[in-house]
Image (cartoon, rainbow, N blue to C red; front, side, top):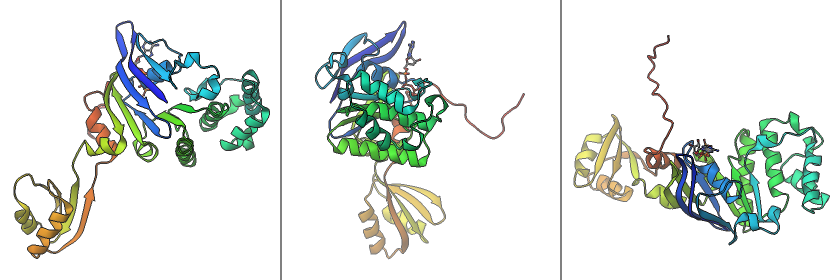
Length: 309
Ligand SMILES: Nc1ncnc2c1ncn2[C@@H]1O[C@H](COP(=O)(O)OP(=O)(O)OP(=O)(O)O)[C@@H](O)[C@H]1O
């Protein structure tokens, strides 16, 4: 269980994290989202006691992480996979970590096989690819069999098989009753992995709660209808609160009325249609709506006719 209460971090004049409060609960995957520079890593570092808050506090299982009697079995963290610079092999790196924390070598072999590193366990970590480094970071995080895991961008650099593996691992860890807290910029992946979301922008909470509530809160269901008789359907449905946008000669997108009401109206008016598809917002669409005012680093619009000097 992670509890973040009114957490604030200032670097000089810059407020990186501004009065942020949320919880990440056991048995659930909580996704931490926000544009670049929103304050995600800083928040994670404060939870792990690596940065001192300017105000507020972060608790893991009821106390600051720095006070944990058995840190590796309290929290397993992956912050910056590239941070491991060693001439050691993956196995001896993990064995050294295990030895300092009184963990048996058998646990090292377990995490090596859990993270798919068996084939490369004897290779020097310095020569690891980004994806292998990421797996080693996750293996290190899991070494102490922690009740809480914190992963900052765990799928960064992983191939599609690796991305799926991280998703399944996170779901599995949560199903065992652990608290799983992770950040990612991959919305489609987050949509499949997380139960709850915390979204921040410019250091402040923008939204938090179950992922389904956050998506539902950002837009109503729109229904795509394909018919040969767009005009008749449009006039049959015309009325208060019904919004219809014509996509092409044979398709419209309708909001403000349920898919069932659309089908009933079409049936009563004998309007033939050959597709009726309710469309919920994707997490990406909901996220873009929520964060549009909180993006610090905007990209220039690409409009084809760019001047090259
Ligand atoms: N040590 C530091 N000194 C000064 N400013 C910092 C420091 N660390 C972070 N910041 C600033 O605090 C803000 C939040 O940074 P942070 O790295 O937490 O964002 P983030 O959400 O993790 O971003 P990204 O998605 O790009 O990793 C940024 O504006 C960053 O420049």
